[in-house]
Image (tube, rainbow, N blue to C red; front, top):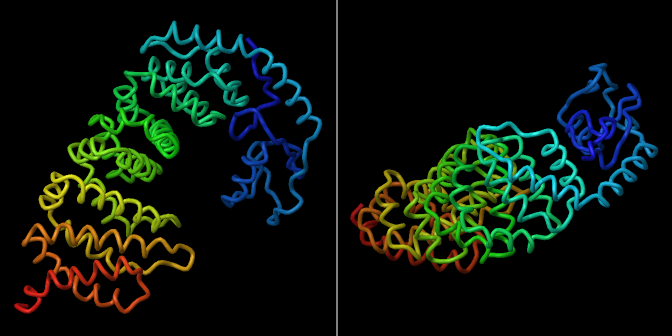
Length: 384
């Protein structure tokens, strides 16, 4: 087994360095992306020595070309040893037991595979991920390797071959560490974005959809909520059966919870994520009868959508207009079918928001749906 020389590992990420640089004031070497993130976060000390650094960041880093050459030579030797790496992973998978601790050989092998990102390992990594579903260390490393796969098609094919993956994915989405949960969501979203057929089995799995819905509702898991939203949206876009499974698993309530809590989300991507959530909610309401019933059963659901009708996007993010369009379309579908939804919409101030929207530079689609909503609500408006 080829152990990674300790000098090749970044002291921050503990991964083999791809671009080693020396921090000149202290002489310590780090991987460039890791030390840049450290400095960008506002730290003004050396991560290893904790010695103070100058307030300016220019000129602090110098390429360590000698170490880079040595790492490249070592990686070349590791690349020649790919059959040995595969054998080591096969042995680790064969010996895996839920109560056993990960072996040093298995951990080191996965770290080398992650550094090399060689083709042909996806099926084996998925097998190891399934067998080691209770071991966070190996699961996190296997996920990192899968997400670094050079071929999304290879990953998609491996996902299709594993029939028991949905149950394993649901377990990891519920019981894994925050890093594992985010990695699982990213894996589903990455493959679903380019190979819809590869994730159909996940979309039609209520346990998987239920686990994603639980994560979408929960914003305390270090970004898992956003990652789960992207994964759920990818699955719901695949086919009608996936949308039906999503509704049965509580996706409508989860999406409404995500949208309604958006005011407390202080991330730059919030507006784009709201739009994605609203687009998926519209898809569920339009195509699944039970989706509309789930919305009617949730107190305050109509008011949540009304607040999204006239979203004023920031100059940095113009996704707000798209969110308004999806909110209007969802309200139009709900109000056509439910008198209670129409009353709730009026009481939530929908008329004012529609009039403001019509005076803005909204899209033709948004304007047509806004006019249709106004006509639908005219009778109730007159009585108020």
